[in-house]
Every structure is written in C-alpha cells, then in structure tokens.
Length: 405
Image 1 (cartoon, rainbow, N blue to C red):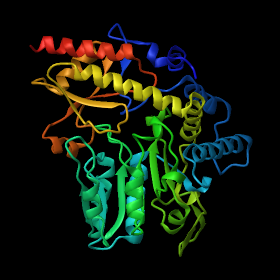
Image 2: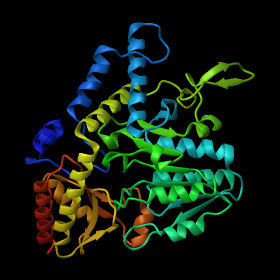
Image 3: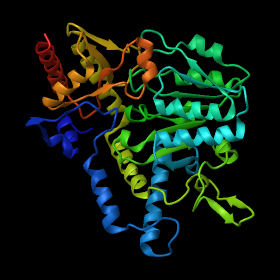
Image 4: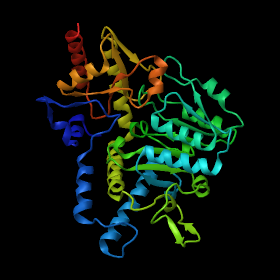
C-alpha cells in the first residue's frame, strides 16, 4: 500500500491552490478527482487508437473495440459478476435507473402494483419510479427512517406485499452517509420472489462490492463517483432479467435485423447499448478500477473508516454544530449545520479558505423534509484526504462562527 503522500501525488488537482490556499477537497460524494493513470489513459485513447467500436474492419476500430470489451471484463471482475454479458455500459447511475424503470415497467408493471424505495434515496432513485408509476398506474411505497438515519426494517417487512413488484434502494445515503442492510433487504424481497435494484453510486467506491454474494438483481453506479470519467456508468443485471426485459433505447448496435415490418434485437449485452457507446469513458473507467485494486479495496475502506471516526469526533466537539445522520454503519460522509448560520454562508466562507464542501439538499429533498431542514453542509471524505485537512475544516468552521457571532 502506498503512503498518503504517494497517493496524493497520483492526483494532479490536489497539488493546486484555490484563492492562494492549498485545495482541500471534501466534495467527493458529488464527484471524485482523477488519478494520473486515468488522465493519461484518456489521452492515449484519443492519440493512439481512437476508432468507433464494433463497426469497423480497420486497425483503430479493432483496437478500440478490444479495449472497450476488456473494460467490460474489468468491471465484471470488480463487481464479481457471473458473466461479462451481465455488464451494461450506460451514461451513469441516473441513466441506468431510468432504463430499468422504463424497461421493467413496460414488461411487468400493471395498475395497482407497488414499487418500494426508502426515504434515503437520491432523486435519481425516486423520480424515474414516480414517472413509471404515473405511466402504469402503479403505487410508490416508501420505507421510513428513524432519527439516526437508519431505515426501519420492521416497516420494510410490513410494506412488502403480494403487490410488490420491485424494491429499489441505495447502498449508502449520499445525504447522511447511512449504509443500508442490503443483505436483509434482498433476502426478504427474494423470499416473496421480488427483485431488488441497488443504487451503488455512493457505495461502490468505499470498499469491496460482490454482486454475487449480495445476490441483488440489479446494481448501478457512475464512473465519476469512483475516480473515473463523467458520462459513463454501469448497469449490472442478472442474466435472467436482462434476457427477459425489452431494450429501453433503440438504434445502432443493439439490433440483429431491421426491416420496416419488424426488428429483432442483438444478444446481451449489446441489446441494451444503443448507438455509439462512450467507449473512451468505459476504457478510462477500467483504469480507475485497476488503480483502486492496486491500492487494495480493504486498505481504502480502513483508511476511510479512520477518517470518518476522526472527523466525527472533531466536528462533534464544535459548539453549536449538529450532525445529521448517526447510523451505526456509515460511509465517510458527514452532514451538519451550524446553529443560526445558513449552510450556503458556511460553504461560501469555507470555499474562500480553499475548502470545498457541498451545501443544499444534495438531490435528496425527502431526507431534508424528514428532519425539517432545508439543507446541510456535507463533507464527503475519501482515501486521499488527511487528518490535517480535517483539522483545517474544523478551524474553518470556527472562523465561520466568529464571523457570524
């Protein structure tokens, strides 16, 4: 395992200054910074072998297609999926969820059927299901959360019914950091033959993920949340579901034969990859995953657990600061408010000190409604952050308090 200085040297942007001060980046939940290997790989794609995939017979197309399919194999291994055909490249988590919401809805949902989500969901795992429910006459049911930010499992068990057709929950809350008890959720759903989708956008980057052991039916995540490029995402789906579901987009590459009378579809995984896919994004995502494997995902998880412990201890010592989300299991994300100081004011002043945090509802308005607030300040940490940076955040918050005293 590299030491922290070597790790930070891998991320060029961490060396720059903001307003003349060293950048302290605590907005990793929104997007992560990119290691040099990903940046270099992108340049290599565009300067060495850029060619449209799956279509050409020339060298560049062959080389690009091979790298793209190798990336699929890398993702399969990273998730421990059963087959590479179960890995679909998409535009991101939002694109993946929208695709399944449309496809699953068209095939399986009838009036009166029910979809279960939790109060902890990002809008991307709420709105597509609401749209599907409106289109199909279905009902969206919501698993409640307690004051600590944990879902109430007894209420989840009660909500499961013969009308439940699918459960779609986050792996970890982007707003509170809560890690959901996925194994219990999935086992209960499977006991009544209900499939489960997991939104892994805030979970996949924080440690090992094994979709075979988890036994989820669908798992989705975004490249830019896991040190890869924007505009690329992954949809894992069990082969039995992907085989049965209709495509959610039509176009080139996802077809077998096209006539004006009828179109037949390509085999998996291409059935769900319409048009020219973001092959540079997929190739660079694979480089990001390889980088994480090189560091060791167990090492990453241990580092982030210690950062979370230290940051929670230091922030909890600040008078007038309240942390929202105190679940027993959390990713390295802390949401807080300072008494009588608006979160935007806190965030703007910290920014002038070179400290990047997120403010607002974090695209999770129902969570904010649950606590009767209109937003929080969120510090989302990752393995390239340090305790010294956390100390600087604490000092910055104390300065904010003085300014508004």
